[in-house]
Image (cartoon, rainbow, N blue to C red):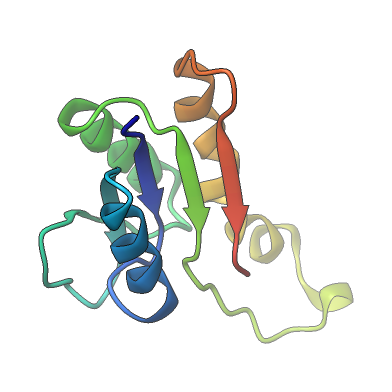
Length: 120
């Protein structure tokens, strides 16, 4: 059974390795990238995961091309070089936009077991 898999930060490194693995399993794979345009055959969407509007646009594009997201691998790295106690609400929240917005895609899908995996 083919699933729709979304991997944030899937243009290189661990994210790319995950994308290749899911593709070998026969899944339909979409990846997001911010600065490094990916090579390969994956459906790639430019997305700054700290921007709610870009996250929403990414989900819309993926849903239109591949269908509802069933598996999310949250791999995009966001660095805020601050101690947790010194982070303001905006700094802290920006790291979690994609996971929060992913609920949209996973709730729409009627599958019995959506998956969210965070590599951070």
